[in-house]
Each structure stands twice: as C-alpha cells, then as structure tokens.
Image (cartoon, rainbow, N blue to C red; front, side, top):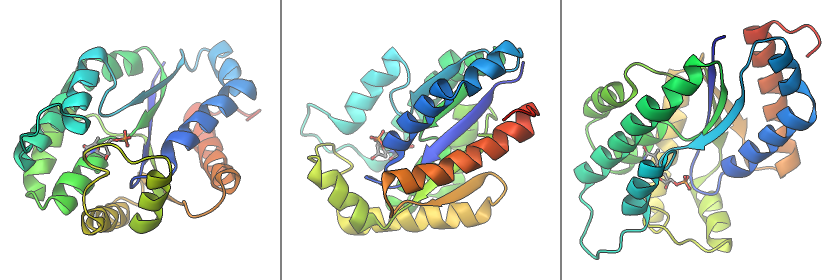
Length: 226
Ligand code: TMP
C-alpha cells in the first residue's frame, strides 16, 4: 500500500480549511474511501496541518501565531520554527502514516514557507529550499491544490471572522508578496500544483476540487468504478 499526500495551499482566507472539510466529507460519504479501503489500496484518511499537526507541533504553532511575549519574533527564528514544526510532523506522523498507506489531506506544506518566509519576509530562497529539504527528508506532495485568491479579498474574509493571529495582522503588502509567491511557485511546478480559482462560491470551488481529486485518485489507484 502506498500512501498519498494531498496539500491545500493559499493566502489567508482563501478557503482551504473549508475545502479540506468538504473533501473529507465527500470521500467518506460517497463511499469512495470505503471502496479504496476494501480493495486494500488505502489504509485510512488522515487530515492534518502545518503548523500544528502533532501535540508538540501545536506548541510550536502557538509560539508562531499566538505568542504570549511582546518580544518581536525575528524572521529567521520564524523560519526555523516552521522548519522545526515540519521536521517533527513529518518524521513523527506523516511518514509513518504514508508508509502504512494513508491518504493524507494536509493544510499547508513547504510552498507556504517559500511564499511567506521567502516572498513575504524576503528571506533567501535557496536557504529556504535547503531547510525544507532538511525538514522533509525529501518528502514532497503528490498533489497540491492552490486556492488562488487576491490577498485583499482573502484578508477581508479573514477579518470578517475576526483576524487574531500574528501573521494575519501583518500589512497588506506582506500578504500581496505572499500571493505573488504562490503565483510564481505554481508556475514553476505545473506538474505538482493545480490552480483552483478561489474567488467563487464554496460549492463552485469544491466542484473543481472534486474533479481534480477524482482524476488523481483514478490515476493513483486505478479504480474503474470511481
Ligand atoms: P493557518 O493554518 O490558519 O493557515 O495558519 C498558519 C499560518 O502560518 C498562516 O498565516 C501561514 C503561516 N505559515 C508560514 O508563514 N510559513 C509556513 O511554512 C507555514 C506552514 C505557515
């Protein structure tokens, strides 16, 4: 059994968390997951996120997004904390799950580090690639769904539900650089990253995601009844 890693990426308020929940519900309720399990192709469906995918990672997430200290978190410290979260998540959770044949839906992964710390904070991209390499130990996603949304539109959505974390509070120009980052990263990796237009209703966005998921599941698992 070979596990598969599906990642959802995008700026604040792009809708990825909602779309992950809808994808999970669809896989469970349609009977698709049960069928893949009964054919011995998938062990289980796992939903996880970065930062915060394990108990220790949740502590790192709190440091990153809700620090109790007023002390400024330095850009390089931020980068290293995201890398630490990823190293812990992958070695302690993701790799074992994938080795057992899990189908994993992950909220953010390495592209977020390149977009936020590279394009957003302006840290050296070669350094980030190197750190991502160390943290992932070579693990890459099988498919990344990038929900494309203008930074201002996403921030407005995030604001309407009460923006409250350290990164959401950064200037619009920071989030615009992040969005530019995702745009360039997607252009650089057309095989791995599928762009989904996020500026539509939840249902319209999900219909596109469902199509992409169906196509990839068919490719990976060769299930004729999908
Ligand atoms: P979210 O899980 O609610 O999307 O919040 C995670 C925040 O952390 C979000 O603002 C994006 C940011 N982030 C980075 O800056 N770098 C990273 O490598 C990751 C995974 C997330």
